View (cartoon, rainbow, N blue to C red):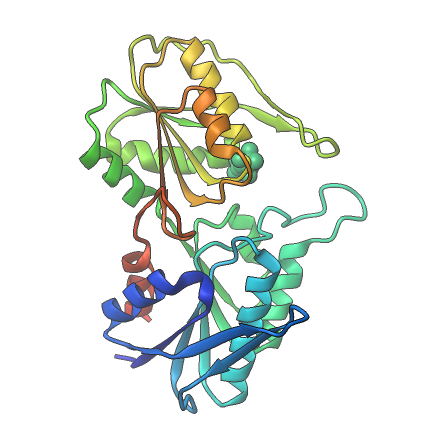
Amino acid sequence: MKQWLVASGPASLDVAAALAAKLGAKLARVDTTDFPDGESKVRIYEETRNKNVIVVQSLHPPTDRHLLQLLLLAHKLSEDGADVSAVIPYLAYARQDREFLKGEVVSLGVLAHLFRSVGIKRVVTVDIHSAQGLGLFSITAYSCSAIPLLAEYVSKNYTLKNPIAVSPDFGSSERVEAFAAVLKSEYVSFKKTRDRLTGEVITEDKNLDIAGRDAVIIDDMISTGTSVAKCAQLLKKDGAKKVIAACAHALLVGAAVEKMKAAGVDELIASNTIPGKYSKVDVAPLIASYFERL
Ligand code: R5P
């Protein structure tokens, strides 16, 4: 079995420590500081030649800073002769995986080039926005899913009345199916459209027959909370009792939490790909099992 060394950027200290413990790997000391003008500086205090090093860094806000720290760290490690894997629990820019409007940059493709150019050999992430994004990588890219773990968490911690699992859009249909399989519940997907210029979200009313039932909304990420809020409003209108929102990546930008609460969301549960108050489900075992299989 391979011996691993785990080196964490500042965005993912908890996941990195848990991953190192799972793999029985050493956690390297890495210092990340800022120059007065805002430039990032990274230093690793470890001999890494010929070692298999896993760099762990999520790309939640400040996204571009976290991205640069990851690139600097990975570059140093590969320059020093390490075999570098990158664990990126939340892979930002994954929603921009195609040219939706003419002239738009396929940002995820640019990230894939950058990762390769700094010597990263493989990328492991959690619930990438769409599997299509993996096709932009010319290095190994793998996405594991926290959805079954989120479903187990909900199942263990809540007593739900005849629950229904709900996807706020067709993009999360597979996720809701996986969630419902663990919950042993019915599931449904809403149709959501987003205006590519204004960002306005419209969710089609399905007039569900769910009076008195509990509902769990599942998505890969919650950013502004708009998608979940629109969905929750319709579920409440149709008579849903408790509404839980569960996601892999709780970005929770601005007043997202207040917006979802106002729309009728009672509970919010996320994985720890992004650290925070609602990040209850640890993804380290999922990621560790990928490396154990290598
Ligand atoms: C989009 O298709 C994603 O799966 C999420 O539904 C979306 O990014 C969530 O964003 P927001 O919380 O801003 O509606």
